[in-house]
Amino acid sequence: SNHQLLEQQEKRESNARSYPRRIPLAIKEAEGIHITDVEGRRYIDCLAGAGTLALGHNHPVVTAAMEKVLHDRLPLHTLDITTEVKESFVDELFMSLPESFRERAKVQFCGPTGGDAVEAALKLAKTATGRQSILTFQGGYHGSTHGTMSISGNLAPKQRVQGLVPDTHFLPYPYDYRCPFGRGGEEGAELSAAYIEQLLDDPESGILPPAAMIFETVQGEGGSIPAPVEWIQEMRRITKERGIPLIIDEVQTGIGRTGKLFSFEHAGIVPDAFVLSKAIGGSLPLSVLIYDRDLDAWEPGAHIGTFRGNQMAMAAGTATLKYVKDHRIPDHAEQMGRILMQALNDIQKEYPQLGDVRGRGLMIGAEIVDPAGKESKWGSFPGDGRLASRIQKECFDRGLILEVGGRHGAVVRFLPPLIITKEQVEEVTDIFRKAVEAAVK
Ligand code: PMP
Image (cartoon, rainbow, N blue to C red; front, top):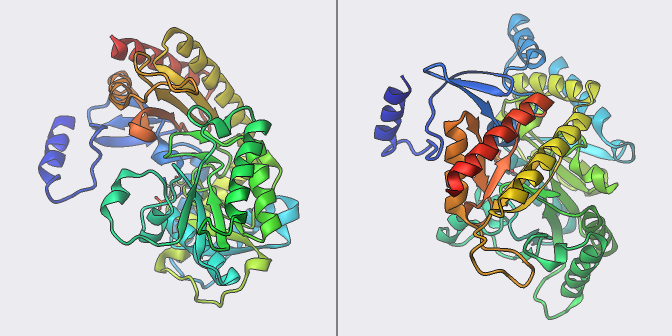
């Protein structure tokens, strides 16, 4: 039963540190947007492997691709040695790139986590430029390895790790609700860009010519914070003018989640490099770095990793990517996101505890605040992580799985599979409304 497995989990906590603390659940099976626990209770999964399950659990197109690999007795792992499965994946991936980037693009298989692909991107940029400093942003999340943790902002766990990668500079992300830079699209973008430019041009800022700038166009773990498209364009301009490679971390935003296949497309820009993981493996581990040939300064072998040859993930990834494009899943994500956002805005009118509702596509967050707390100069209230946790628990008790993130864990995050239907979105928001009502009491 649930109880037995959870008890087992509790006992094991002392020597197996990989259990979640907030989602008391033992899963038996999963299908689409639903998971079922060992006692037969069904939950809607709006966590979806932290955005990994673009097509939900066990999508038939994805499982069929995986079954074919087994049925045909194809190799499951080949390192870099090519196969039809690998060639199809690369073809599908290249065909998905914006045209202006396609001819210039190179792909590096990484091994096989998002964090590893970010590591590869940093190493590539350092090699290509011969420089070492990295421009990154407050609140960003890029992974949990030594290097990626170094460039992630505002993460409490970092504070206990000494000697992270030096020469990393944190710039302010346009966090609308709390930062005046984020305000008002164009004007905010200009302000922020002006600040960053003067920092880069100030010989006494201590910032050496940077090897790269890296950011997420929508901060995920940082609390579902979308950067205004004007700001993204400004960052592209600044980096281009100064010859700084721009790396976009598409690990969470990639493959349709924000309403475009790649989130940088919202801003009509192309970066010098970007990384994909999570959804690109169709629920299996896979990550790739895609970069402009101008950066191609490294020798074969400069970035390796045993599991960069995961054939099953490539087969699942090809099927996912093809389905996402053929069925216009990005458009669907955009529409569903709009419905979800509208419903959350309605709930916000009743409950000022929803200080800010924001997102892009199906990457949405509700920042939970204490409206009785001290209002900032910019009109925001203090984040209330405890209330966010209570809302999360009330949702869970009603069959809805959501994660919390952002500063103080105050942001309730909605990351459903992109195939979620309108009726299911309504079910999610009905549960959420009831959960908020119960939690604020
Ligand atoms: N970048 C972003 C934007 C992410 O959201 C994550 C994972 N949440 C990572 C990198 C790291 O990916 P992984 O956990 O696979 O290393």
